[in-house]
Image (cartoon, rainbow, N blue to C red; front, side, top):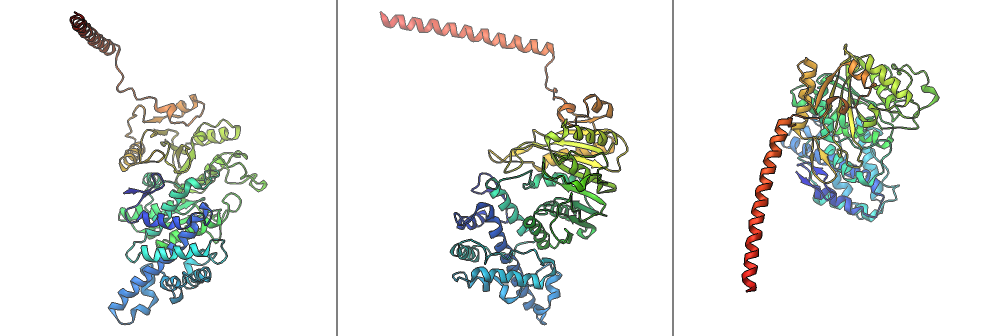
Amino acid sequence: MRINPLEGYICMAQIDEKVLWGAAEKLRDKCDPADYKNVVLGLVFLKYVSDKFVSKYKELKEVGDGREDDEDYYIQDHVFIVPHEALWSEVAKHSKQEDLGQVIDNAFILLERNNNQLKGILPKTYSKSDLDKNALGELVDFFTNNLNMEDADGDFFGQVYEYYIGAFAKYIPTKGGEFFTPKSVVELMVDILQPYKGRVYDPCCGSGGMFVQCSKFVKEHQGLVDDISIFGQESNPGTWKMAKMNLAIRGLEGNLGERNADSFTDDLHKSLRADFILANPPYNLKDYWRPSLEGDPRWLFGRPNDKDGNYAWLSLMYSKLAPRGKAAILMPNGATTSNADADYKVRKAMIESGKVEAILALPNKLFSNVSISVQCWILNRAKTDTDVLFINADSMGKLISRRIRVLEESDIQKIVKVYRDFENGTLEDVPGFCKRASLDEIVSKDYSLNPGRYVGADESNKLSPEEIQEEIRKASAELFKLMEEGKELEEKVKEILEREMK
């Protein structure tokens, strides 16, 4: 792994970050940094699907029997059908011409027309964009000469997307927690829930990273991706399209609704009961409430705070769980201790019902564009006792730059093992790290769910009074010895100076 020019953003091994960053450099001062990824990713997508189609065409051509003209051979390998006019080689011929933007838009129109799963999600704004056409042409030429993806695997587009989100994150203002969820955090959440089979849901799915990681988990454990059903929703129209593209490029089937929509006020999956929920919702939303939410049946633990959406998200997601469903939800640290009246009442009801299974405090600097620390809530609809597992992992992770920390595989496995031991009833409390707390203990702390209040401090290396006295004795003896040596040295220096004066 190497680090790209933007202070510590990791780029995956298959991706040449110099190529990706070189593309972004072509847009410097030509458009808003927040639009870089949209302009670039559209072209990367077009180059990717074109290269893969050409590669498959050559392979089938060698086999013979006219297979290269049979669309089924492409579809079965999740290769998109790319008409001649949409091929990168044809688009690139216009890189020095004024109609380049329109040619690119037409290529996307043709792709949507020939691939049902892409309908309505590809960008078709290059001809209308204010982007300098010379810069756009330079970008096309740059990818023609520097980016060959015929041998790239299905994760490539997602990796490129992750690169750009991370790399440009610090330039893009964030609002209410709308930021990229680090890969290592998603891996932790997926490893805890183990979504081998069933319905996976994310009501604020962003670019679909949770779903992608679920599919990877299933493949790594020799499962069948077809055994999981993906359901999601996203309110931002551009991000919703990107999520659809992210799933399509990997050959994943997912129901993200027919359009972007707000999960609070326009639930596109009303009847869904999910086996697994993984989510990183926007934090501390101040303006989410609408009159239509009054008396909503999803508020199973009571009416949530109408001026802060954190407990509304927790309530919404719990209501979507199947009878044996589990959820892993990221929340800001303050949610576990909020004393706002509505927050306190909802939290109290959740704890007393026994549906809060675990709270994991995660280290800071995990997110590339914000300094906020988060905690992961594990909710379990089938849970029958009121004990809660607390894990304080805030000292874990490895700093890969001054600003960025990642959870290493050993960190993830250590946390997951503690969770499994808790599930199996074999957990041994580790001071400073983990503890199984009873309802009585939680009540005594006024229903706070901050792990630091339960796990305590690690005093395994604390010295006894006798050991302290022994250490003082040793230190004193060493000090006296140094003082004696200093005195001898002073006498010798004095003798030398006196001889010199004579």
